[in-house]
Image (cartoon, rainbow, N blue to C red; front, side, top):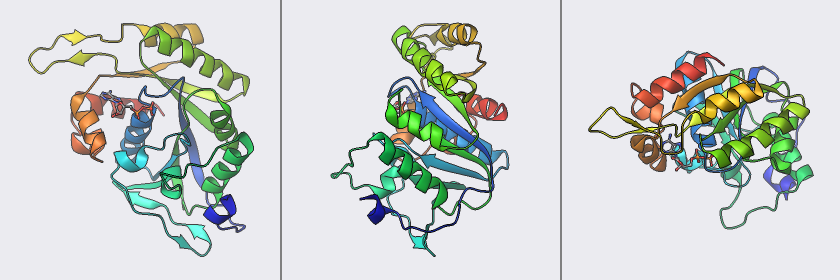
Length: 258
Ligand code: ADP
């Protein structure tokens, strides 16, 4: 099946990438893709050349969040990444038919990811940001292992159940000797439009506790943001839509630490 999806050829598309940043989570739905996308855009806004690889084999959501529905073309046996908002973008979602999901097993995932790294014309990049599959299953291990010199950013919500899962993920990646740059706490609080009071819907202090227990820096805390969610549903990422919002400022501060 993969031979059909990927043309075969000897070039290495990623040879000139300086930094590989993979975004991981303990489980789905905590905002891993949101963080990957907005950090990639924040890095681009700092003047870097940035690629974004959506390697979430279970549910690639970058195409929807960026409003990308076209298929990438190939040129001289390589896949040309799509370009939007100044990012080069490649997603499993561009290659798979929605109604015909592949059944991903470890070796197949590894092979597909290596081909997304090698057979895509990334050109020269300062950063390649990779949206990993959620959790500690085979696909996330294989993806992380397939990327050379990768550093991780781990996303969690402050909720106890989410923290338990993310601890497992952190321990797993540590065992694999993958360096972890830091933790991003997402959905930390909500501020209603009529007051400045912060309502901590999923609990407080989870990110700080995790950071202390695991000895990993807490890079930032992102609020629950209605406009962010709305924009993503319509293909307009937060940083593009409202660059000066509280949320976008946190993303920028996190990106400066990468
Ligand atoms: P994951 O990649 O962990 O599955 P997503 O980034 O896809 O998570 O986010 C899941 C849903 O939650 C999406 O609809 C997204 O728009 C929304 N979301 C993520 N972070 C926030 C936030 N800080 N505020 C509001 N909505 C958010």
